Amino acid sequence: MKRQDHWSISGAPVLVSLLAFSWALCMSPAEPAKVTPLPKERTLLEKYVAPLPNGVQVAVVIVNGDSSRFLGAERTADGLRYFDNRQSVFEIGSITKVFTATLLAQEAVKGKIRLEQPVQELLPFPLKAPQKNGVKITLKHLASHTSGMAHQPPGIGLHALLHGHSKDPFWDFDLERFEQYLKDQMKLDFTPGEKYQYSNMGMSLAALAITGKENKSYEALLQERIFGPLGMKNSSTDFGRVRGNLVTGLLKEGEPSPSWDMHALNPAGGIKTSVEDFEKFARVQFAPDEAVALTQRPVFTIEDGYYVGLGWHIIDRKNGERWLNHGGGMGGYTAIVNVNVKKRLAVVVLSNLGNAHKLAENVSQLGRDLLKGLEDNS
Image (cartoon, rainbow, N blue to C red; front, side, top):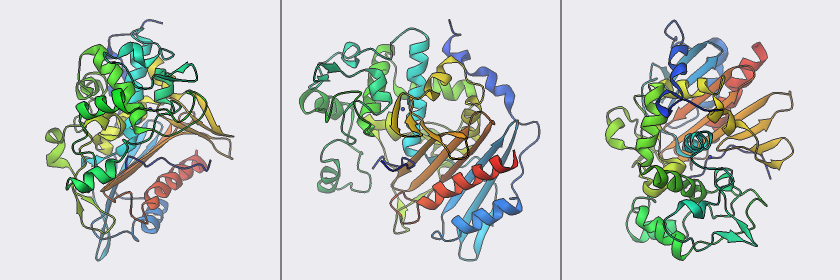
């Protein structure tokens, strides 16, 4: 399998959860980050953002040890405009899975669930396919894309087209429809744990299990256990919380995109956030508590030097560095995060360029090259 950033939407006693991440609030840089790009940063922004359609903007945070730099750039008819958009909100698509996997790891560390626990034990209804060839689907399988579940609900694109919301394909895929699929249509493509197959539905099923156990919504768990403790005030799956700061997404044709409402698949791609907020979550990866460390451990080898953990994809690069990686793509947005835990380096790039655009890979490449530059100078 070719290594790639994953865009598709189209993973000892502890303190109570509210305190689990509170230490990170004290790690913000002492001085405000500068907006003006350094010469090498400007070169990369000109290389990757200037060719994009007018109206596309990127919001970037470059984390280097205890300091951070925030960069913002927008493609205009007159070239790139540099400005401060660190509080602007973008959809991050599949990067949401890292947050979902973090919630799952917290539950495991607190002893409320076991990663090897069959998911069927945590559900109030029977799954159509809880196992294959005698192997039951576990929470670990779901969070590492090794369950055998399909990526998307079958026929989701055709259904959206026939019902008049093709530009917002998950608009009516609510919990009722998801549960109906799980009870009546679900099937596994292979024996759980045997292969890697990226799955929005698998991560969403894992979240369904823990939200049911806690009797709280996915949004409530995010706010209580991650966003609130970290001070991520512009982060949510609820458009009502962030609409005032949300940057309008652009489709591949350059026209405005409706924001995708992921409904039952929110745990696979529903988070909207800013780089100012994401910087705080990136820093947690440098000195992880037990739950965060659990998400960073390889669970399955996709190919030599390329692994999947809980949510994260893990890349061993040729220069000896190891990256945590995830990409995200929606109808009007593309995003990327790469983290070098050992050297305490991270780069997050959020954009309002639709992931189906032919140059969407520029966003990913910008993030990679910025982190490579940090490594070269560290």
